[in-house]
Length: 382
Image (tube, rainbow, N blue to C red; front, top):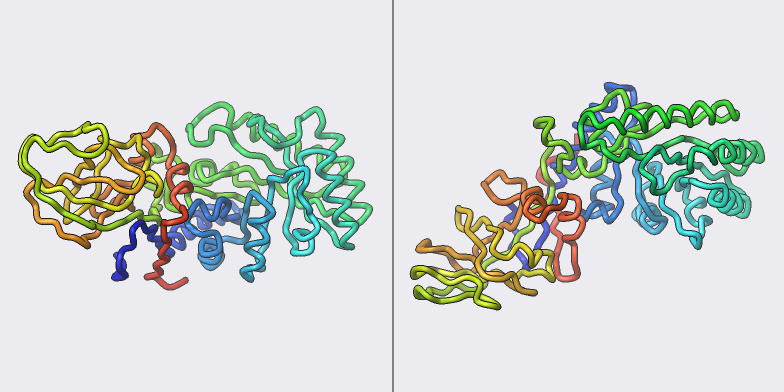
């Protein structure tokens, strides 16, 4: 761990782990002849978008993907010049600044394509566009019956010199459920959409594979893959075995007070836990305002002074209490709430399992106003 002092609540971001993860993922893609788009939306899944983007590009990623125009422009403002693709637009988005910064855009409808084309014409530039087909996820994406009209309009816009159609793409619904029939069905639908685009005179690449498909379906890599959660070392398909990924985020705090209490002492709001014997309690200054779910009360542990120790009583807004038994703990001792699991500490995946959710939700929800983020880079770029 870092020698830097631990703050009240701190996210330690291991850049070396991100680099290693991207090397694993981009190597898989290269075996299929595909390029790699590292997804850094939602502030790099809570890890810091600019930090992750730079590490990914140094380690085998060819381009970057984000959800919003603001996220794309943040990367450009940080001096990142690699291709950036942005796909989730509102009807009020101003595409002009993004087109001026060579941000690639997605179109799922005639109206969306027309807005992009108009903005490109006003800029006197060519907008690079990825046409999205809805292959079965039923979120964004053009329905199959409207697809021929969209590709015809895109071909006209390309002929007019305002648009360059660079890709046809879609997103998988069940890639983390190995063998799910929807995976092949969606791939077949993408192939049909691609053929229709080519028949309209376009020459786009295809991209479909998310993290799970990068790891398990090389036949769906096509020309470009889009790993997201796996970049951060969280495996979307652990049931498929060890893929050589390492979690990059550690959530840590420190002990601010210890006290010895007698048997019969009850802890925290509601007195939901009572000591059955004399014990030492350690107070840790993090709570649900810092990303520790209150619903983990009585269901979580931390790594403290060389062992896993239970959190007792209710998790509060600003603090939680750890039962340390008869072991010696001290003010200032580091507390690991989750991390890679190397030392036996809990992991984000364990939190997710206990809460009945996914590890994506855990890490993306961690960066909050009074939580610091410490970037640690113990390994040099390749």
